[in-house]
Length: 106
Ligand code: 5GP
Image 1 (cartoon, protein in one colour):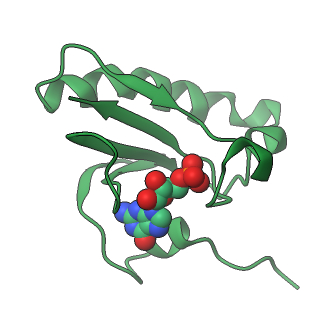
Image 2 (image 1 turned 45 degrees about the vertical axis):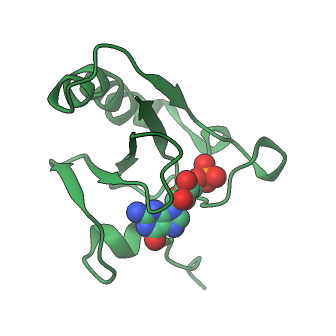
């Protein structure tokens, strides 16, 4: 039985709505539904990797891609500085088990 589709995969597949800031062949960037800062974005790979613990060497490209995208997205939002966070595992505060980078800026 295949694992249940994550809420982020449903957003990627347009099954539930979200405000898209960016989309390319590897990832999407959306507004967090419950923002903790003036700008609170989520950078999400299209590949449904559950947590950082599940990464394999095949994922270097997509992870590097998202890291390179962060400053570009931040600048597009008028930020000259920002915070990032990747919650990992239940004890790391992760609620959605599909890797995502929080981008927060004031
Ligand atoms: P985590 O705790 O897993 O690192 O963060 C999950 C984040 O996803 C939370 O900040 C939460 O507000 C956000 N989130 C949860 N469900 C949705 C949703 O349906 N749409 C959007 N845009 N964000 C969501």
